[in-house]
Structures are given as C-alpha cells and as structure tokens.
View 1 (tube, rainbow, N blue to C red):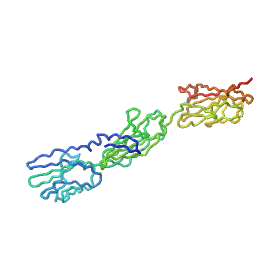
View 2: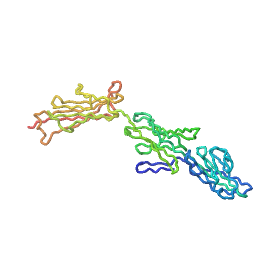
View 3: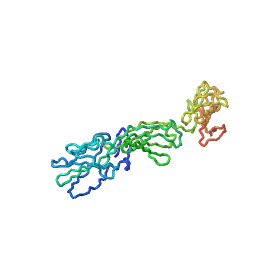
View 4: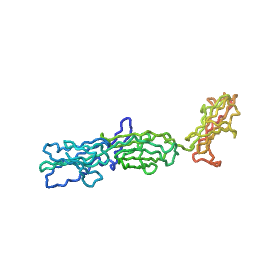
Length: 388
C-alpha cells in the first residue's frame, strides 16, 4: 500500500509497515481434510470488505441444479476450528447471516470479528465441492486531529511538538509527520516519534496516536508541521491530511547592531540622522534603551537627531532586553563636521572610517561580562580638514 503524491502534495510517501498491511497480501488457508467422499476444492477468493456494510459471498458450486446440500462454515482469526454458521433450507442460527436460494451467504453488517475465512460446502451425489473466501475488513478512520502541545518553544530544547490522532479505523493506521512539506524522519536522538494504539473492545476498531518530539533551532521560526494518515481502502490506499500547526521558536539575543539612516555618509551640521537598533532575537526585544555619554535618550527601537550640531557628537549606545531579561548593547560613534568646514573634501570627497569593538552584556544579576559572540560595535568617524 503506497501513496504517490500529486502535484499539489509534494510529499514522498513510504509504503505502510509490513506489520500492519502484510495480511492484505496473503492469507493462510488451512488444508481441508479428505474423507472417503471425493472432494474438489477451488482456489481461495480474497475480498476486501467495508466495515458495517452488507457483504454477499457466492458459493459457485451451489449454482448447479443437482446440488443437494449447501453448508457454510466460518473460521475467524479468533477461532481454532471451523464453525458452521448456516445451511440452505435450514433456519439460520445467527441473525447476521442469511443463505439465499442460490446458496450465497449474506452478512447483513460485517464487522471486524468477521475477518477470516468462509467455506462453502456443496454436495452432489458422491462429490463434495469446497470453495473458500478470505475476507479482510477495513474501515477508514475519522479525519486526523492534530493537537499542538505548546504555543511557544525554545531553540535547542528537545520539545514535544504535538500529537496526531487517527480515530476508529481498521487496521491500524500509518501516520507520517511532515515539516514544511518534507517528511520528518525519526533518528532516536533530536527527532523521535512515539505511537500509542488503543483498541475498542466493542467495535474492535483502533485509535492511533502519534506524538512528535523535535529539537527546534532558530531557523525553525514559523515552520509548519502536519501529519498524513495512510489506511487501506477499496481503491487501494486512502490518504488523509491533518491541519497544519505553525511553531513559534524563542531564542536569546545573539547580536545587536545600530544602523544609520542615511548610511555611510558624513554628518554635516544642520542635517538629520536616524539610528536604528537591530537585534537578532525572537520574540523582539521587550525593551530598548538609548544612551549618550551616560544620559538616557529614548526607549524605542530607533532614535532620530534633527538638525545635527557639534554638541551631538559622541558615542550612542543602544541596549536591548530579551524575554529572559538578558541584555546586550551596541555602540555607534557620530562625528559632526562644522559648517565652516563643509567644503573641505581632501580635493575629492569627504572621508570616513568604520571601526568595531567588543560589546558586553549584563547577566541577570547585574554583573558585567564579555559575551562569547559579541555583537558588532560600529562607529563612524568624520575628521574635518582645512583647505589651505
């Protein structure tokens, strides 16, 4: 039983586990004992029957007019020996079975308990004809339900993503997980799948629960998970798709940079400049703090200086705080060229340089520590020169 994805489902599907569907390929038919009466046994017929519907089994030999006796026997998976269930022109002992005039057996509502072998014995003169039918019962499960375990996840943590539930099916459903359209393969380490199978003792139907455990990274922000359920059907295989769940992955601040607008430009007196604080973290920082020479300037993600003057020169520092109250800073130096030197350009154009320095952050106790992955500190130095 295999699933070949269509163009709208770019997924590769492996065949269902042999443990589950092997019985669809072959069914063992016990040998029939030979009596003094001559016996003719026909090759077994295999049928796939839908749960809860009416099923009619033909007794081919009984169609001959010279047949005197028609007897039906059953041997299900739970029986050790054949059991007589009906005879032609004899009152039926089991309400779910009927024998028609042509010798056919009718099962009014087939259940999982009927899965197994049915034998028709037709006698004429000194000859006994036997025909065996192997019945396999299937029931497509309900539409799969995908339940997410948590609303948010932490990068690097081994987490329970969700549980896919396939309810009231037979045989046991095969469940496969997908992440952004690609099959998730369990490796026993950072990716694991645990399956729990529940059997209803009344209906003999199965509920299959598959739970995915996965180690997410920062690159998994906003990825989507879904599950596909594969089960047998009259046409071959039935594929059912669950809804998708999108995960939100949180990770601490990894870097902070300050971007200038306009970028890579000397700052002349009277011009405006906007500094933007960018932090690589999810969710976005819960707080920003702009400072210059120890003085607090603002608490948004950007800071604008209108009509820059010489007194605006200096180092501008942006500190961000993430969801775990970790903090990290970046520094940008601004130099302002005075108006009287605005035309001094080294003969060609204004000059500038960029420097980097190590950034630091404070831990949860307020202590100053150097970060292993320090954010870049960017400074722009504008050096005025005088034309002789």
